[in-house]
Amino acid sequence: MEKIQFYSKLTPEILENCGYQSDKYAFTFQYQGVTYDLKQKGSSIIKLSDPNDIWKVEDEGISLEKTVRIAYPNLLFGKDGVACHGAEIGICIIWTNKTLTQTGIILPISDITTGAGRTCKFSFRFNRGELSGDLELVLSMYIKKRADTVPEGEDVLINEEGVSVGEIETVVLDFNSTYMEFPIEEYRSEKEPLWWVEFSQWEDPKVDLFSKENLCLYLNPYYDSCPMVGEHIKNLDLLIDILSSTYALIFSRLSDEDLTATCSDVGLENNSICSILHQFIESCTYPLRFNPPEVLIKTLQLNIREMLKEDEEE
Image (cartoon, rainbow, N blue to C red; front, top):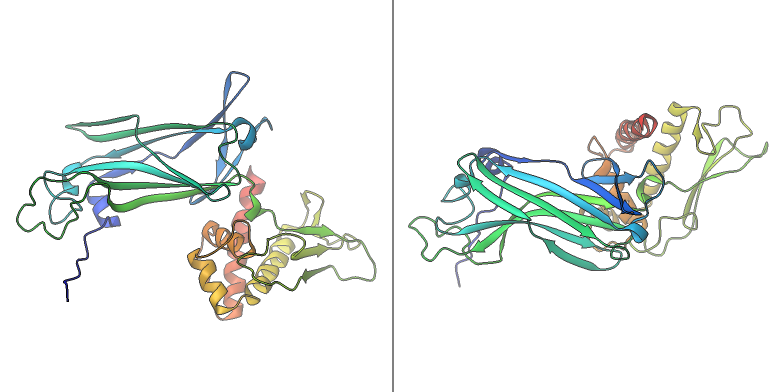
């Protein structure tokens, strides 16, 4: 039986030791020859907005810039690093647009190493019609050039050109902001309760859309305490309680298999119920705890409060 080799990969400790730093992405678009900045909210999942209300990614496209710095690039090599001495490590951004089933690689426009360290600058433009719905950006390191000879003690390191040695960071842009747009309808009636939820008979939540046809929260403005009228939130604490209970009901309808797929983002169709729940989980400030149910409600309340506070502060 052949020996199975597990090669060293990037770890948070290696990144910290080599002095890795990265600027936030800057996103812009051009309209009638003028460049405008896009506002962003979130960390791993980013929602973009245009204060001028001009931009649509399908019409204007989008440009990105990013700078990555490594203070001690030499520490990436050798038995305590991820590549053999004599090899060359490349840094790139792998992009994926699930909606259009497209992917590609963005290489740095400049990659300079001096006595002060290594600096990579990225700049890239997606033109009109090249993107729709979403964009995943994965900053990665790979073996750009293999070492001619593997030094003694470094045979535990990968030495094949083009092979990834690890992902540094991942962000997802949700251009439609679907994961934050919960299906809510107003229904005024003195005969109905303050709020209720209606679900369809889902065939497969990994495929069925996160839309009003499959789930909807109804708020009844007949009551003065109704927490939301149109776009206006007038009772934040009550809305947090209602949304937390609603999300708990949705999670409770998932099978163990569907919940596992949701958490791991495996086999999920774009904008499906499980896909949007996965994005919701990723946007949470505090880890969700699914059991017991009362703890799920508590962690949902903490996270939804943070999300709604951010919306109010914009």
